Length: 254
Image (tube, rainbow, N blue to C red; front, side, top):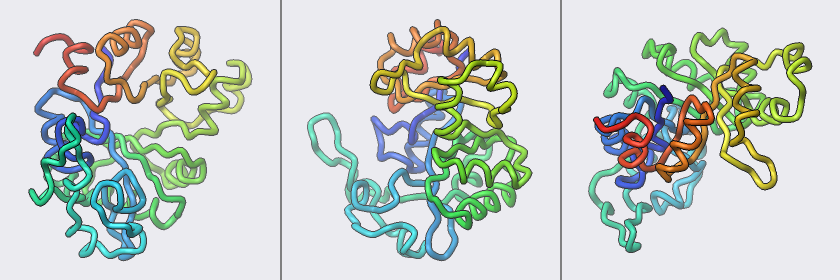
């Protein structure tokens, strides 16, 4: 059965990449949390999609330029809008969490963690935080950046890794015989259904990935019928902003 990832938590309902959004997603029955990591100036790995606080917190500063003591005061409820455009979570104590805090307070949760910064020291700090928490077996590390993925794999990482952008391009453009010689290093191809003229949502693509021992996860899917279609193609995972709608579509009623 395909698994469901909560993209940034249950972020349709609650401010993205916050502990309440993660907890809500787990209550709804997701199998894993998809989230993003940056590292503060003083070396604390934190979970936020953007490299700055402007969009979600109304603070126009880069996370890498700030200390953890600064970042943890930012109001992560500021940037969340409901369907009417209203901001219902301002001043209600929604915060950017640290990676250590999430691993500690959600000890059973599986994470799909995107290392965003192109900084080897940031990657090392993320790895160190996960290892101290003894959580390698429940974290899949991914990054668009080939250097980040390479550093993770060279660090004798025991958890899974996703393909970087360069590897995904090779997967879709190169024949299986060539790819077997190249030996793509990851476990999962995490892709959109389509990107411009390129279609990833085909049975041929899924079969090719499976032939090479790779699982295929699609992002970001919020339409239940689209989720069902992709699962019927053979998708191994669906990432969604709206797990309340997608979990029943993929897994059936709870």
